[in-house]
Length: 515
Image (cartoon, rainbow, N blue to C red; front, top):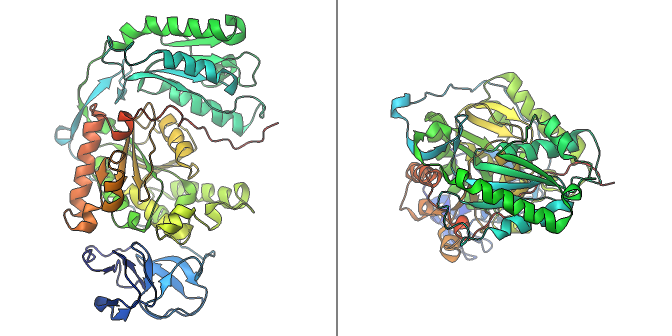
């Protein structure tokens, strides 16, 4: 995006690139406030984080932020005018995908110099950051039973098993009344299997009703799963119904507890870390503080051999050409564009969703005019290394480095896909204040601005607003985030874990009809 390397973040209005025709208010600017650096006077009140025209912009001209198109003037705009969705037009424009033209191979650190964390090594060599026992429902009809079993295992009842982080139920609203075959069922089974296999689950119960379309035996066959001492299926209609299945499930987990507890953390390479990148409740500061700082942390992680998973396909729309340019190959870049075209030409046609222009009321209140501007910040979470692979939703991520997974922008659905793909930690940036948490992978929340961080300090793990405050540089914040990732993967509890969040954030993507 050819960003300025060191914008003046202490100025009342921040210029992000010399070519930009807007600047960003760092603080609230009253009507009539002079902005001497830009030789203009505010014609309107400019709330913090919002855009002000830095020069005259003619109707139809592109609006540039970070020297990237984020919309077009819907009327003539005078210098000093507040820019928002009512005087900015969202429309399609041509982009040069320049496949792989700017790809640069990552220079990895030698293995002896790579950072380490205290991980749990499974028998197959995979490394866990948490140690849960999971209960996976095949269908909504077994959801209550699954939660009743999980809820029986209170902290008091697990006190004798200090190496177990909890018993977690993963339930959902589908599994029947859907297409018996095809991509919707394949996607659901892929997601369930991704959790069943996840390194952070020491053992799993799978619970079905018995007559649902997503049968346990068909799920196991389709996903090459084999029942055993660590994967135990239950069918309610065969087990005697609700009460007897709950009792049998509790008894099975009681037998599993000693073995699941018999683990210890040992030093392992940061190359075993796979980060799901999320943003929610974004604001205009997201692209100035938290998202690029997280991107800096991901560049560090990638050099240490780890994996960064960018997702939320609607939230890279408009800047996808910045990713295809650094793809490792034309094939990888085209795979990304294929997913964008599916969203635009098939899935979201005629729908009032953000990929077609309008972002949420919270995003708008935070200074984001449309999806182009939101995507500009969202894509920054991935850092600057080469795009190594593009995955379908919930597909197992095998490639190291920076990769992309096709998911919706809705955070619980997106993170569910990333975790099913193997993410063992999630980093979540927010400007408005998201309280998201998930299991079995911990969620680290990064605030974009200090006022929100102070207001929601019990929910936020890091204040990236320090970058705006002048107390930390972008690179320093990236290093701080990387260190917190190492500490979290070593067992340090995040704010969302302290609250016990994650019991209801397993949300597989439903793309089919309900029949």
